Length: 349
Image (cartoon, rainbow, N blue to C red; front, side, top):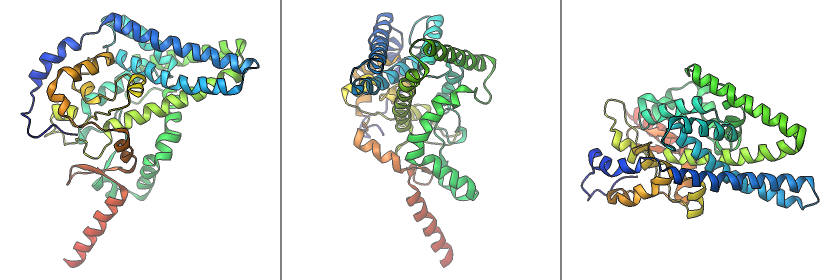
């Protein structure tokens, strides 16, 4: 994920001249995106309820749930932009929509937002890992770690855990508690989100019934969570990703080379709110999702950044450790080869 080496490097100042107009929220775009996301999502919910409560074929309800999942991902992108105060011009509008979409996505607005801002501040920084990102160890850290920690890390990084158990745990359980170090406002957002989720559950229980509500809500959240975790994973977990120690880290490289340009099919790009243009989002988080593609189109030099297609992104499932010597993420198998080579060298010395 790097710029064409024949091109003259682009400066932060040159980028900012183009970016600043696109980093301004556009009210009608925001409103239209809410309408074309929230209304279909609610209609799919109604169709699923009607299907399970009447003699309609069950496959209609199942299909409604499957389609609602991607719409919930798109609602999460709106939530995400509100956390950056980039969706609307006014702070109160971002906060209000952030709390509404936060309840819909089971994510506390202030609590998650604070952790996510820390993620942006520390992306690509080997010395400041651990807040709002995927747990990543270096080869040296893994080799020197106690056996129990290595076992836990292998379980955590296994695709069945990462994209099976993990997403459900994060959005159904983990987000019900405030994160470590989050101040009062963040904790309050957790309580408010949980309260509204409880009220929705009680309302559903007295109208459509608990069983129907949970049979629809839980699968939708799990589908959306799994898709969302995958998107977040490939945004920073690919072989040639940029990581450096704090004293030499370059913020521009951390944005353009430490965040992927995940080129998705148009329909997938629409549902994911253009978040595949993640290098641009990290370049300036104030750019709302509906302006990411226009920003990419207007900055000629950004178009030389190599995109990562769906097929290539699947390779990210099999890389787990940061190799500081070769500046890339490698697999456990590659790490074992490194260990064997070291032992062989030590045996001959």
